[in-house]
Length: 356
Image (tube, rainbow, N blue to C red; front, side):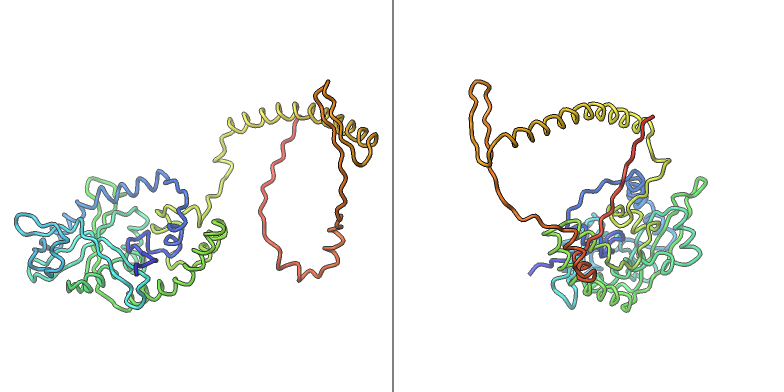
């Protein structure tokens, strides 16, 4: 049976909420900032990897250095060197066949002197993330990058490639000057970290089932359920949330007076004023109509039907008797604790326009 929870190992997809949002097919609009950051990542990746080969004394892996079962899934040049650009890994959760992990590494190289395989994960970061990496180290500053590399190491080993460590190779794209700041961070494989990741997503399954069921009835309810999920690295100012396409669902943007287009406000208010003047005249006519209908009811019996062909009008009166519940009295007579179970919260935004 195919996995019904598919988890991308890439940084912005390690969030349990994003997995749920994907299933709802929510409308999203990428901000210019997110588009630029994604462009930066794609733009710099190739040159970051090239710089890594030079500074870390690496070479390309050859096709004979990986298991035969994997050779048909990689691109090989005329010299037998492997290009991992199209290499995609898929792994089923070891304890739950309904959960599947997918991932695509940036590169897998080999040490020139020893030939041991080395994972490379390239990142183009801004100044704030760069400072945190330098001062705190990758595990504390960017645990999402750390976990991503750990999962890739685990998946490579599960495919028969014995990789014991990798490098997070990082470029500061906000560097002042002609040369970008460049740094690499060694990450040793740690199964305890991987086990925590596997356990986290296994524990997600009941919530996934619940939210999937709620989405069939009410998308808004499903979104509120998703927002209650605990996220390991939730921070609107750090890359996983900052660059997530669903960011506004978790952190709705707060509008300020500086964001308001006053010319547009003025245009709309003037049109409202014009229409309200027209409505006021219409209300006077509606009041007159209501009064005439009242007089007509008083003239006619409880049951009446007549067509006046000369003026093209048909008049019909019917009478029905229905119970008239005094809801205020009913609610006051009920226990407040009993009523709470039927209560819902509703946020209302009020607008008031005053004319001089």
